[in-house]
Image 1: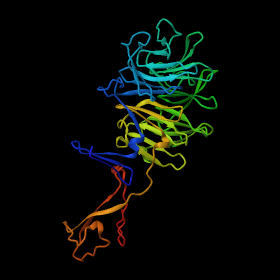
Image 2 (image 1 turned 45 degrees about the vertical axis):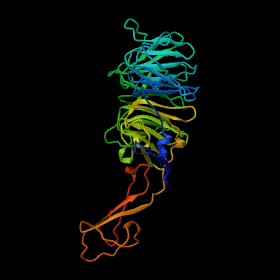
Image 3 (image 1 turned 90 degrees about the vertical axis):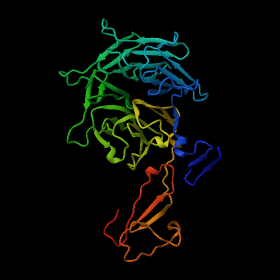
Image 4 (image 1 turned 30 degrees about the horizontal axis):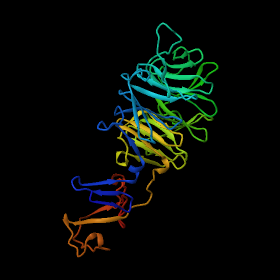
Length: 425
């Protein structure tokens, strides 16, 4: 390292002897990243982070797509890994992790691809496993698990890929199954359950491949909210995955066709898509920060929506993200408000308060002037010239200009106006 400099926009520039020049934008410092670094002893077991959960003690549980389960202690930096090759009692059921949840008693529930559910007592290891048993109608309906949730009545609810919704009574160890039936209009809307959520009014919501379902848990019936072609106040897409509740009681839903705000009182959906500024319409994860801003992970980065103004800010790899693409349902909001999004190249974790939005227009300078295709012959540099006088013969000329802000130059936007002309840009 030969030189370190911070410019007016907060970018830190580092000069080195052999590796050229590097820059560190402010937002890149705020978006923490955790990924696999195989040359280190303490590193994630896999590259793709498919599930994430911060438990109540601050320990981070990280599931990978095909390399097992990890824990990360942010205080010490220690990472522990667990797989099907681990010794008992930490030998997990499967290495492909889909979801992680901590129940009210502190137990950690982990859902896998095709290997069912296993339950962890942090002091003892794995204490329980649940799998489908073809001889037992009171067993888990399928081993391919999408989501796990604990309702206010104490039941554990488990969503599966192709066999609907399960309710576990932990006292008896028996499951009650809820599935879709074409002949039953009040049955579960679809066999694939993507997410489960109970709001502050104890309404019980189930996200499926056929829209949003409101469950009457006493009757075991479901009310369906679906996309209606031609109705802009309906759900934008029936594939509903992440869900969160705002302070005003509205639900925010991520779909394959953008973000939706749902008012349970009126039944009206308000849509937000790429047309409104989102980075991408494929919503993978969703968290609401303590200021009410909506954060979503997508196939093309992270977006932050201010629901009051409708303003959207987008973030990409140049801001410090693990990559451009994020995993479905790999999201979590921690106890202190920290947000976690898992992706194909690791995990991003950040405090939304530390993500500073640059609202100050950068200085703009003209860097070059050409006349009739040739560089202008000026007495002083164009950047230092206050005015330039052109001849009537100079019928064609062009300017080059730049904004002096290097945080993320690709996001700089320009507007120009040629006074006295009908052609404005």
